[in-house]
Length: 127
Image 1 (spheres, rainbow, N blue to C red):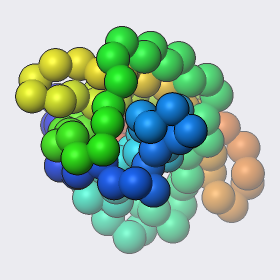
Image 2: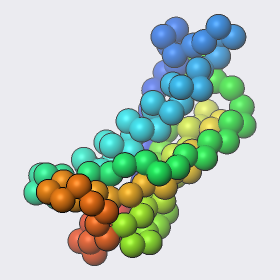
Image 3: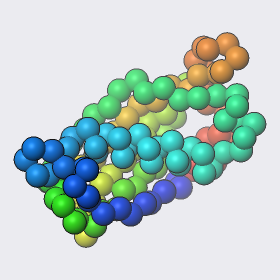
């Protein structure tokens, strides 16, 4: 499985009124890295033919992140079923899991705007 990792430092704009990272920021990071992973692995032809929509997110908050924390965000595709894909995003501080987001996505064909079984060529790119 291909894993994408990114590093970031928590800044003031990430904080909420409790002075820890806002829950919505974690979700933004999860969505951003998911899109980046897709764009990094596919070619323009595939991106022009398909797009992904989220069906569900399950978020487990284990610990808080604070101003100045150095974080690692990683993502990988955990599996496929027909037009659906399971993706995991983990947010870590010094190898300690802070947040885990498990999402189920569905592949949409741009031309028809209908669900499309995930093609083998796409599955192979992420395994």
